[in-house]
Picture 1: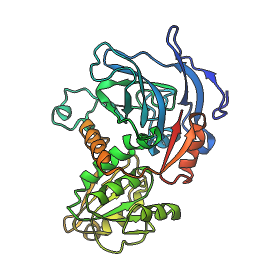
Picture 2: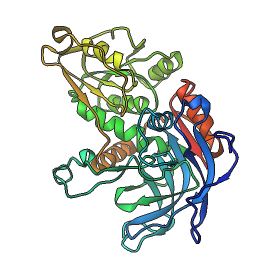
Picture 3: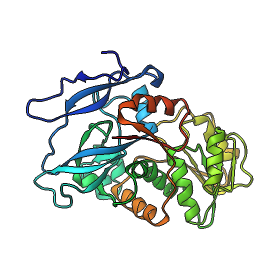
Length: 352
C-alpha cells in the first residue's frame, strides 16, 4: 500500500487473540507533504499488571510528532504509532492497578516510563532518566482507536471539558509549564514568547494568569492576532525587538537562529529557556552581547509526572482558552501536513 492513501493495511504486529485497532504508523520518515504515515490495522495490545487499555477519544498533534515523522528525531521503534496527548476512557486494567477503573477518563502524555532507580529518578528529576521511554516514540501512541498506557504515568482527567480541549494540555501545556519554570520568570515579570503554536498559546495564558506581562514574537499574522486576543501586551515579528527588555523568554519555535535574537532581548540576569525537543543549529554567540551580565541559556527536557500534576491543577483553576482545529482520526496525515505547512493556529487535535 502507498503511504498516505488513507486506506487500511494489515500490520504484521497483529497477534492471534489480541483485538485489532485502526492506527497510523510512521512507515518511513519523510517530509510531511510526502505523507510518511500509513493507516493500518494492528493489535491493540493487552495491558500488563500496571497497564491500562484505553479507548482513544482524542489525541493532540504535537510538533514532536512531526519531528519523528519527518526524521528530525531518529526512530526508536519501527512503524511506531505517533501521538502523546491522549484523552480516552479506560476499558481494562492490569491486575496491579488500583488508581483507575473501567470507564475512568484518563490522559496519557509524552513520558511513558522511567527506571525509577537511577540517581535522576531518585532525585526528583525523572525527566533526565537515561532509561526513560516516550509515548509515540518507544511505545505506540494515540493516533489510533486504542492505546496501552502505564497507569503509573497516566493522569486522571475531569469530566466536563471536551476531549479535544483537554488533549493539548497533556504535552503542549505540561511542557510549556516546565519551560516557564525553567525560565525563572520573576513575579510580575516581563516574558518573551518566541513562536506561538499549541504550547506557546497555553503557556502565555499561564504566565498572564500569574501576573506576568507577555510579549509574543512570531512570524504568523494569525498567531499574532490570537496572542493579542488571549491577553498578550504586544505581538510582533520574531526577529524584531520587543517593546521592552525581558526578564525571561521561552523559545518554542524550532529555529536555532532565534536563540541570539532572544538572548539579545533579555535584560540583565534574564533567562532564555528553549522548549523544543529539536532545534536547528544555533549561530555563533557573542559573549558580550548575548551572555554577559549573567544572562542564562537553558534547555528543557521532557517533564516529570509532578510537572504534569501541577500544570493540570493550575489549568483547572485558570481555565485557559484552548484554540483547537479538529480533524477526524482518519485525517491524521493531513493534520500533520497542515502543522508542517504553518496552517494551524493554536492546536491540531484528532478526534474519534
